[in-house]
Image 1 (cartoon, one colour):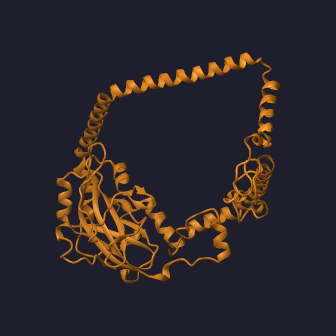
Image 2 (image 1 turned 180 degrees about the horizontal axis):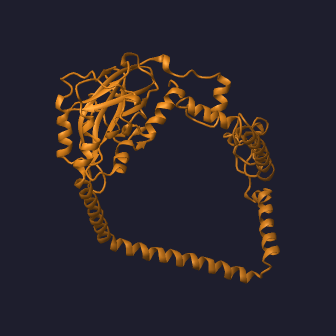
Image 3 (image 1 turned 120 degrees about the horizontal axis):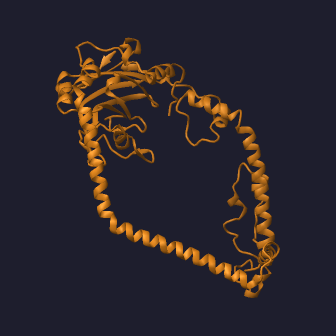
Length: 403
């Protein structure tokens, strides 16, 4: 059990957040992390009246620790004192930590800022090109500011022995049949297995039959009613290995009624001979004749009424749009004022009790000089949350899969 291996040239001692883990030279794939911080940092938090401070953790891998691991960020209440981090790659990793808080104590803004993703990448970068953690501040919505304080670094070497072994290939493929990504750990794989051996077989059977019938209908329709050349019936015969796009070959998109095999257009008067044209006309005439039984002039009147109603609806929407455009500058200013007023009142209420909250939640986390054991049994009972107990149990029965 060791603390952060960061040297004095990387982190000033007055800003130090100390991180502790069991056996970092051959660490578990689900690693327990504990933290404490310097007393000067605690006093600075009090001085800046940091509301709802959180510990922001991210992980980078590969020398020189510049590549942030996707999905490894965690926002943990600073008062919890411990958390479990899951790793999905063996080898050297660097754990980065800093204390963050939003100027009005809004946790939702912290999550939107640091955990929001654009595809697989995070929207907000934390590590610069030099491989160091950005110091902030960061700017949130409603004129709020997210500040950071302190830094912590812990280097760990994740041992390959602690990763879960993949099951037989047939079971792996069947359990992940409906999923594009690999399961994170054994628990997620077990959930997929429950689905794979209960609902998945009948649903797949019904889906295959439906795909065969629909493929047959499309192939016959395109061949008989439109006259498409080169129709492929493989989606009907092999529904699991083909798609509907395969029915209509990309190099055979011409109809026998519109062009010959060379691609030369046929005379235009052959178009009505395409079976779909008389079939469509016959269907429309039969529909109106059997359901409505109205003379022709009434159909024209109904059509005109529908068009008039739609035109009136569009006219009303246009008037509403013009009204909003004229009212928007004043409305926008009023909303901003109300937002700032509400946030200011909230921060004032929280600041009144900040001294008591710090003494109760954060003062016990000031470093005392001795290393901390990353075990929930070593924590005070009031620090052990339900989530922490669940994560401790999960790491024993749900080992991560290697990626």
